[in-house]
Amino acid sequence: MNSHYTIIIQWSDEDQCYVVSFPEWGDYCHTHGDTYEEALQNAREVLELLTESAMDDNQPLPKPQLFGQSLQPV
Image (tube, rainbow, N blue to C red; front, side, top):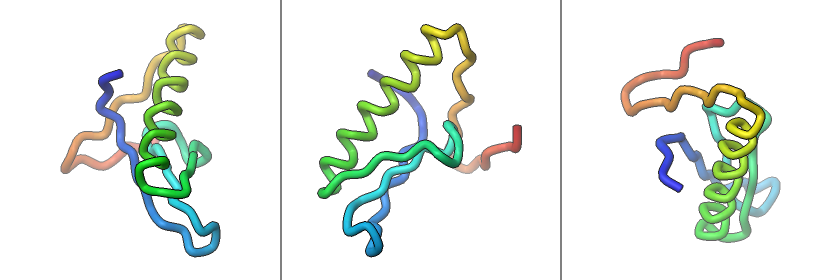
């Protein structure tokens, strides 16, 4: 899958794993991984599921955030 969505991967001392968030998809869209590589792989899978689900439900995809631009409130 080739998408232009933002993936933020951060270490969490509290959870002792890498936590991934997807800003364009909302505040509650997250995944994680024990390693950075695992977190990135999980992120790719989640993004694929999110886009497939939206398309299957005929829902619009969120507009990708581009470098140097901030997300606009919906």
